[in-house]
Length: 184
Image (cartoon, rainbow, N blue to C red; front, side, top):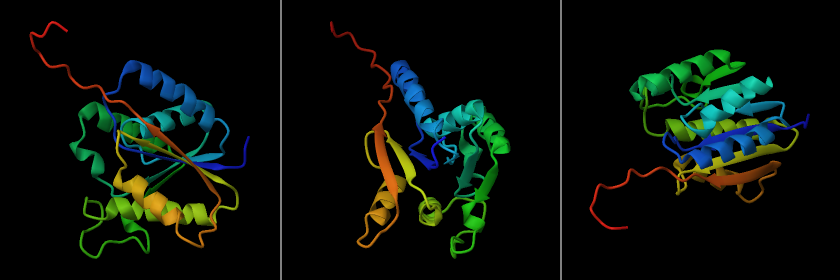
């Protein structure tokens, strides 16, 4: 087993082409099986898939959650999967309760501006404290998310000494076809 940690950062992706999902799971499994711990916040899509794969491969995962009740507006099936995977994590960290990441504006446990960015800063601390190489995989749905931009900008600062390897993946989302009478 490779001495490395893996961080998965993905836009929430619920609707993907079937071939993309199959390809993603195979590739992601090969990345996870060589790690001794992964970090995933369990957003629907690749982050949730990473936790499911980690469970199957018996690779421990840690869930840094920006705020406790972020799942409440998700569909019921997604909420149930999230809560199940949350219970199986070796550790759950509610970042908005962690020293140095507490909002002056918003109370703990509810969403608010900047809480997702604080989650990335918390992850960057884990990268800095780790003595080995941290592998980071970002998934976007065609554009850089706030989390991906914050992570890259911070780790690319002059004088940064972190040892990390970044892999970027982009997913194609299913777009519902328009009902029209065009011949093609």
